[in-house]
Length: 105
Length: 456
Image (cartoon, rainbow over all chains, first blue to last red; front, top):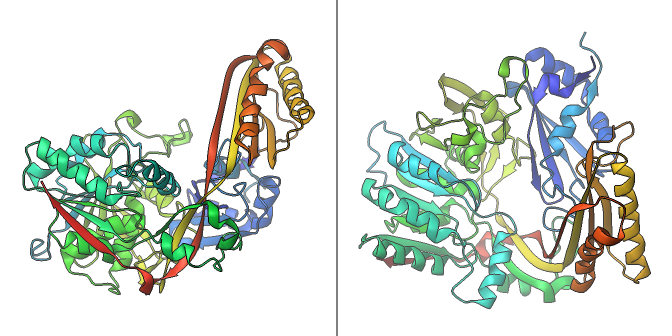
């Protein structure tokens, strides 16, 4: 079975202008470390190619075992003019959770 | 509520009655009747709603506030007045004064004479914005001067200090226009505990407001992912989701809970998702009242569905406030049609190609034209090796400065019913005017707030 972010974490996305933020909250310490090593902005932008221009920033909240990804140019101009079905980018957390990762050590 | 009313170690209890304009009704009444709350907040103003309401007000001087205000207030006001629960809401949108008059009328009709309703004015800074065409938008760097004739609204995000003025009148109901969402919750805490701007406890108060502002999103709403091993993301009785209340003490301690017996859940997982919702740099979340730092925030489970929030810090508030500028930017037209069964994807792709060619044949040009299949690629874009589903739905959307051109998109999808590939079903079309919102900054010194008090 392929390991995906969904196996290690949960998350939620939110919009502001043309920028989306997606939290990735690990279920435990081991998952938090594995995500830290492999769920880089570079990996995330591969999955979001065609949907977001970037840049991507990753913030770390060690107490909450969480990462906060902030991606620019991700919402087709923002909720007020987007032509997408998902004008808020609310479904983008689901895309984040599908990203495949190397097996845990 | 004044500092004197909250004596000793009693916390102020604030309920969150709505997380958006159209939210469920009964959880708010439940908070009033069984939640033991002192304050009920309704957060009902999305980014572009105020621009939309400003347009309504142009057409009808007494309009421009939340269309559901009367119904929502009528459903809770008698119970709230009976228990001394004060109501704070941004349902005033582009016309807080007319909204306050409506609330006053409802109080009279319900036999609640003496009810005091305060309208907070001063977030509307349209004249100032129109006088500064040299300003550039924070998002795109475009000059305001370039879109001057199309601007319909400009509203500054006021802070808790402005709402404090309204609470200071002793009003039973406070109606605002644009304010920062967390400020709706922070202001009553500042009033109850005598906190002034700059107080370090504003960090905990602001974090509390941020956690509460989306109501059900912290009590298990927008959270369920059923069937995961161990049921870690199951939500009990989501059809009876309770909305949250926050206890906030004078020393800044915060606990989030909900009414006993309601559905949903409050724990570290739901709280962490909501803490990071719409947040960017966790060390610097800029609000009108403070720059919030949540990097040390932690959630401690005190009891089932009761969580203590610790560690939020506040840096001094900024010298300028964010202003949302709403302006008209053309039209979006859209049409949809479904296909099912054998070869459904190929028929839907052909249907999309027919619409694309028809629009080009008619000499219509769009700033952007999307042709996509719902069920395949409409949310996350196309991907290789994705199996074709049993049914798909064609969606075509076009953006144009011309309303007629936008409307034709849906018409061309509709004509596929008799002219397109076999088996098209379930047609839908729509056209909407685009109200775009971007932001500028205004110096705090340019803001003049005013409170108008009405008595039933």
